[in-house]
Image 1 (cartoon, rainbow, N blue to C red):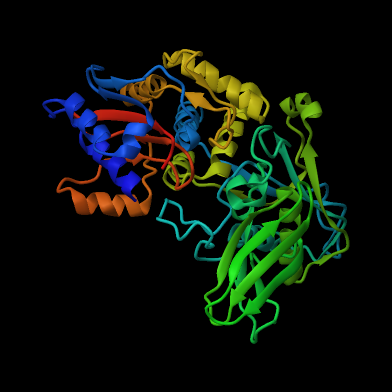
Image 2 (image 1 turned 30 degrees about the vertical axis):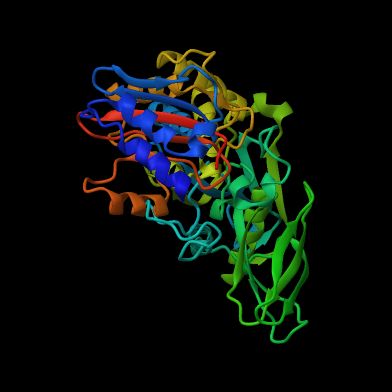
Length: 473
């Protein structure tokens, strides 16, 4: 919290009205041994005039972490427009016969909608990171299943296919950490995203010492084979719960202990193959509505070597159900406010698909480079390898971020309020308690070992402060 307070103090030290922002910032950096030992990059700029009020290492490259999302959401907003929508469909090759049976596969065709979940749209503050959002996680999928049943379908004599071929199947960037996909923050990227391509395992103590812990899944869809080695121990004891899943595996190993009477522990985990998971969930929902399914649940992907075929729209056949997303701008707010990694990656691929005909990471990054050139950001001042900031080789200079944000501030096509704040709730509460004026719109990293922060006050005569520090403390 000490580090958070110093960063906030730096933010508040640089309004345009300040007589000497140089002295104010220098004094704050000198006030802490940790700050003095860190390597800082800071630029403070008047939004209207472009005048630089303070700068320190502005052309040095720093790891942006989740501030990469500023680049992604700016790109999506300007290239797709705030009212852009995504459509998810359920299709079949032919209508049901006289018996109400579909002869052949039923396809769930992903359109890139990131919010097929219980999340509130427009954005509402979310619960703790591991806690599932209030509401029914499969609500959107249940709506589609209900539409299929309403068409008089009684049976499906074929597979349920999760089709995510709208985007190239490259679920992770090459330089993400090997354990990122285990957890929800590194969930696999797909054109189908049910419940953020994540599930929550709730771990509860057993009835007696030595009993296995009780596990509950949300959503309640059996996907992983779980080896539960968590044991119940005496009250007041307990050890950390460990999660292990080998890359590409559907076997989940849980170990550790949980004390009697302890509250549930929540594990937010990523889904290995979102398209297959969605097919499993849809099959379950169809059966709950009395529809017999004689086939399995399978995934259909577009592999990178076949990406050229993605430029041609395939025929959907008969559309039995459809779901249209909220406008894109609502998800951009979710990306920036909740620092939602999966949604940022999906937005990057949506831009690639719309502008370059291929829904791939590479196509999205190619369009990002073109966009940044238009914004006056030189190609030597950044290296961006993904849309979320999980990629470790990502680098940007404070000056590059200032140029991007000034470009968005002055653009008549940018939505008012961009960038959409990513100020963590605890820091926001501290800020409101520490200053008489309302907290500015701001963008800061998630509580993780990332040495970055960004501030972008949406004030008529405000100053913009962009800063990085290393190491994180």
